[in-house]
Image 1: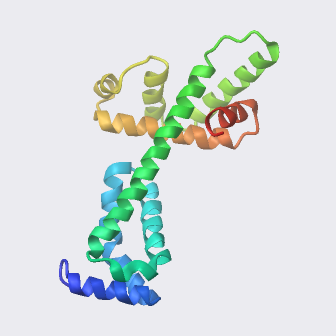
Image 2 (image 1 turned 30 degrees about the vertical axis):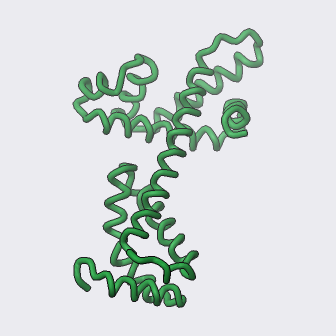
Image 3 (image 1 turned 135 degrees about the vertical axis):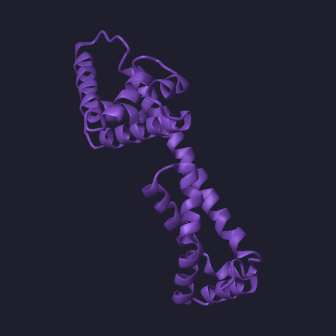
Length: 197
């Protein structure tokens, strides 16, 4: 197949619309690496990019009856991947806000002794989770959260790009959220009720 053979790709879509799984596999093989590279350039996580690619092709297969109306297969596939990527980035942004707010909440002075105990447990939990990360990730996160340094200041200190620093902070926040959600404690329920309902 040529670099971009519109006729051949439209024929593939027709075969996929007829339920031909071999044609679907061929389309997947043709576009997987390209879409993976495209998505990874935004999310900077191979695992998450791979998941988005899988979701993209799942949408194509689930909507195979509509494929005959598609004029440009490449544009169609990239549009789905782009939308899935936007959804992912929006979710990450919400998660970052949730953990940021949790961080603020753990700094609030509490009068009730039960709440103080729960605060201490939550702070220890966060500390233990952070210790499972690489030294560099801990350092970057501590500079951001404890020293209130900007992404640019951190980048200059550790010798990384500003975008890489931001990505590291997002990765740490995702890691925290995942592990916090696995603990049946007051911190998780506080976060859940406050930010998800």
